[in-house]
Image (cartoon, rainbow, N blue to C red; front, side, top):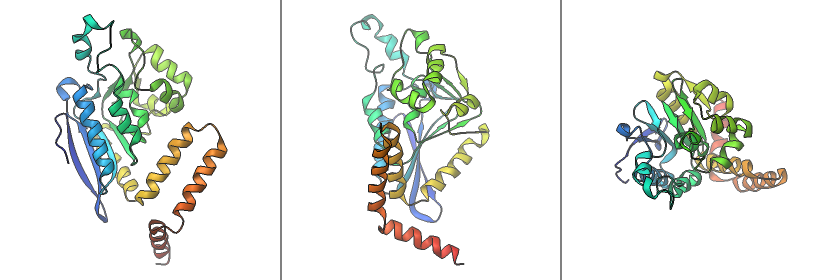
Length: 266
């Protein structure tokens, strides 16, 4: 496993599965409100890729230190290049393709734990997670238009599909923060927990996911993601049927079914 400058890595064992782990990646740029610099973006992308390739890791969790989940793209880099901004946006302001590719390409369950303020890219990266659990103290804001900018990180595609066009318009054009309860009602957040219980209760749910057969979990995630972007119902059904046929009678399928009937017979 690599060492990282801007995040920490912790593995949590999955009960009853000695070799299985849930990997927690914690953004550790607290002094800068976990603003997403080129360095942090690179660290997070690399850590997600390594977790995805590690057979022991069943799920990946991303959270952050401090009261801010992420203040978004590091504007100090943006302002540092302000005289040249008309010619070319700085690297930190344009979509960080390396991070997008890592998040969108992760085959394992990817979970965000939002413990505080999420601003800008701290919000627009959330649709790339499979589950988002939030503290009741968390807030979500996309102040791009207030800065004379526009939405980024593919959110003109991802957010309308997740929360709907009207709500995306309000989030982006009004540019006012949402509280956690509203974010949950809109579908931006999966569940909200009391602040002090967020880490423990969310980890319990992730460990439940991690205890399931990993190939079936990964294939189900793939089908859901592809179905979300499909344009025709029949294509989704065909993809599901192909996946089911490949899984019937597989070692993982047989082991899970045998264990299920064994529990029922007790």
